[in-house]
Image (tube, one colour):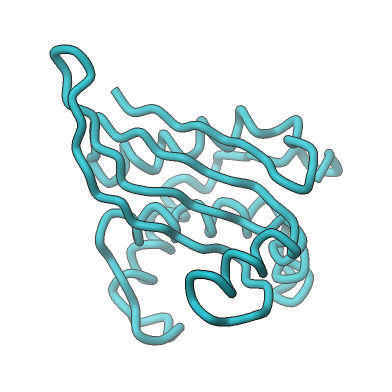
Length: 156
């Protein structure tokens, strides 16, 4: 059984965080991963800029960061895989949605898929749409197209 924990820093935990948790669990099901314990941090640009600066030496905000851990731990009789952590800037997410003229909900779903695929060991060298990881990302997004995280006109 997979587990997803969502927290917030520098911003209140959004009312839709349970829906985001459910969506992340569906993504893990889509890529057939089990016994994962995934951590997702929702934050503002100040926090993600600090993380980006500390870990990538880039002193500017970004939409998402994935921090791979890749360890298996024993919890009683069960083993649990700790893939790592995902951090998402809600401010940059909103900017991206406006830029790409899509809903914030679609951008959030895309970012969650993207981060999970990185933690699963996938990577991309460019943002070309024919990159295998990005092709899979869009395929999963399409398969889960009826899912919603942020209600229309709802709280950001």
